[in-house]
Image 1: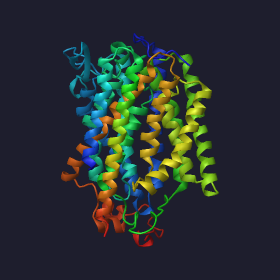
Image 2: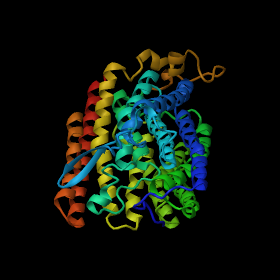
Image 3: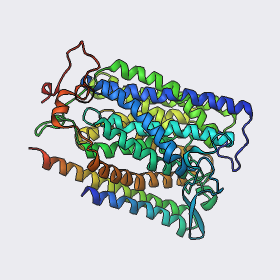
Image 4: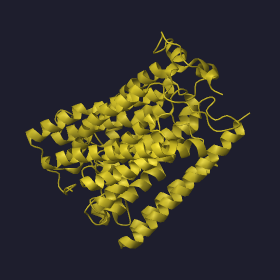
Length: 437
Length: 60
């Protein structure tokens, strides 16, 4: 749809700077929406811990990124003027790690473009660190959640952000190998959502399923979310945040002109709407009635897929992207739970990892540049082939220091009482594990 | 088994990177990058299978 990723970074006018800053200040609504959805999809005896955990993880991720991660992502230039750590292989430079200023020194005097990029990265790291929390709900200890957020914010996210956004080797695929404009990910479908979703898979593997989820005999036990109203209202909140997120990302990372922003917002809405329609239809056909929580997952999957391609695809192409995301979301949620014994209460593995990767593929399919599809495939290979094993290894080591899983008694009485000493709904009778097989 | 699967996955990435370095034309690069992704997929499948076997062994 639009010219993307111009070779030279245009200088931001004051008006564009102000608009981008305003958009970025709305972006936390996307995080709030995901937090509401996560909480609603968990059980009532863990609701308070789940929502507090969302907030604490955002805080930990922001602080650790400021102290450690930002210097590895290389958004603010280092005092030495270095563009990062680079090695040469086969006559090409491979910029694999950023070298930015330590402790955000020089933030005030940095170029406006760099300041906005850094703010975007703060929001992105908060979102990426939040996603595994939803998958570990009802059995993941708050301390372990914070520790994993710190690991993601300090080492893993900065690596991905540098490769994709800050002139790393994936961003340079176009210059070095003639692959389109390099790996494109304006809204963070890979940097944020695929990374967060793959981290969620690592957490689920390490923490194991909730007690009673997979009995020795028979099918897995259904553990529906405790508040569909939270989940569905979270979808509305997330939409507002996502519209701003994708528009801001298009300006900052793809250097889109202002005239491209309405189209980006419309494509975001169309992708989510098509995904919701598809999930609604699939669940209606499969179960006889539409499933509210799966429809919410479908909506969110559409938003995630749009993060990669809303600024690139046309409206019709966006609807196609949403339809595909909406069809595979309920099927993959079912596959993970029933066939692969993966207990993912929030569906983050499907909604964020799978839909994020699909969005990246779609961006390659619909981008006008020659070789763009190949650049997107290489980026996906890097996310899947290097970052998933790295996250799993780091989390497995972390699990030995800060055990992820709560003890059996804590799981029985609920995370609220066990970790916080009080529940979210003290006046209501809550369901405990005895109610499940 | 899970670790074996996870160790195979970076091999897929290196296959994709080797294709970029070794082949000048996009067609052969694409073929090898897709092969690299397939190797990663197989590694992921082995890791998932390892997870299922470990979970089955832990059930009482």
